[in-house]
Structures are given as C-alpha cells and as structure tokens.
Image (cartoon, rainbow, N blue to C red; front, top):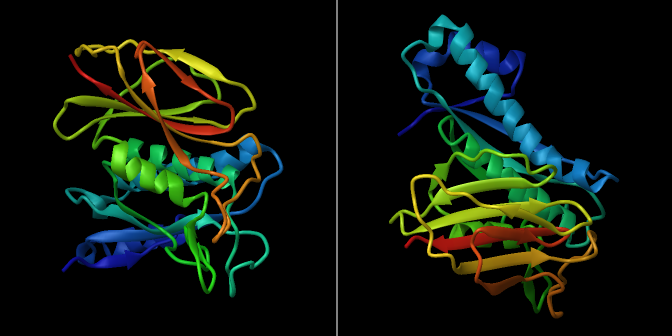
Amino acid sequence: IQVVAVGSVGKWSEQMMTHCADHTDLISEHFYCRDKKNLLEHVRQIPNRVKRIADAHRGYRKRFDSLKGKDIRIALDEWNYWYGAHVFGELGTRYFMQDALGVAAGLHEYFRNSDIIFMANYAQTVNVIGCIKTTKTAAAFAATGLPLCLYRNHFGVTPVAIEGDYGNLDIACAWTADKKKLTVGIVNATMEKHSISLDVQGAGLSGKGIMYVIEHEDRMAYNEPGKKPRIAINKYAVFNAGKLTSPPISVVVYELPVK
C-alpha cells in the first residue's frame, strides 16, 4: 500500500511536503485546460502545466529539509481539456483534433519528467470528459483517444535526450524495451509541413521504418459515434530515416529499427 497525499502546486503542496512528508509515498496533482483561439497556445497548455508542476516539485526537494533523502514523486491523477457543450450527456464534452495535439504534447512532457512523475491518469475513459464517446447504439474514439492508443502501442519506454532547434515542433524520442527500435514522436501544431534531420549518436539505424500519423486539415475536426471516423491513425512506410517529416496539424510517431 502506498499513501498518496492530496496536493495542489503552491501553498497547499508546500505545506504537505513540509509537514506530512514522513507519512507520504506520493503526492497527487491535477489540472484541466480550456479552449484557446490560437492553435499553438491551445496545444501548449497541457505540456506547460505538466512542466510547471514538475518544476515546482523539483524546487520543493531543494528547499525543504523535510524532503532530504526522500523520493516523493507526483501522482498526476487527473489531466485533460475540459470545455464546450455537453453533447454526450452530463459533462459529455466533444474533443477535437486540436485537443489530440495537446494530449500528445502532454505525453511528451510526461516522458521528459518521468524521473519525478510516477503516474499520469488521463481523465476519463467513457463519455463525460472521456476519450471514448457513445450513443445508445455506437461508440467511437474521440480525437483525444487516438494519441493515447498510438503512444501506448508504438512509442518506446526509455527516454532519449535530444538536441537541436526544431522551432514550434514538440519532439520526444525513446528506445523500445528491447533497444531494437528508436521511436520519435512529433507534434506539429502549425499550418505548415516540417522536416527535420535526424543524427543519432551511439547507434546505427537501418534507414527504413514505419510512421504512424494522426492528422486533419481542420483543427476542429472530430469523430462521431456511428459515423466513419474523420480522424484516424494511418500507417506509412519510411525509406529515409535521416529525414523525418510532419504534416500540418498532426501527431506522428516513427518506429526506426537499428541495423
């Protein structure tokens, strides 16, 4: 059994870490984000909130004597977007392509801070603010459900440090558990196609691979239960692993085998 203290970055979490650390295994945090007119600002909300929480708790470890010798990590027990009309019953909001980008960028920030974030629970699963929407006769993945599926099934488990100037793209890399593939996630929250050069240090790639793409030209596109999905995960072959592309308004995960 692990004891999870209730936290909220700021004075509340500071008091918990100061006075309750001897009785705490993990500390919870949670957040929700609203709609923004600017696409990049809308997408950056989630990774920015994740980073703010992680940075705050890193600061607590430096400031408070009560945390010396302890590894009280973060249980981010709720996170998501939450806005718009209740289309699917009580609090049943609809999710759009712009939200899928934000969820993917949020996953990237969790990966970057996986040393201090113990778990991160997307809220919720079905209807309400969930990633699966239903009617009485049909069900469909909301836009936000697709990056969760994509990264769970095709992104690696060991984060890899990256360097370079990639502008407004959000990029994360990880090795698969068997170290046979390098995976690269790219979130493109712009209206332009982008290409980046990949130079891997300490390992050789085969030069080929697979790319999985979630994209739509309309940032407000969404999936509707009982109808053909407007947003889906598509799979393509890669023949030049040294140059990675990302379409406008897209989430891309590359699987690149080693030699």
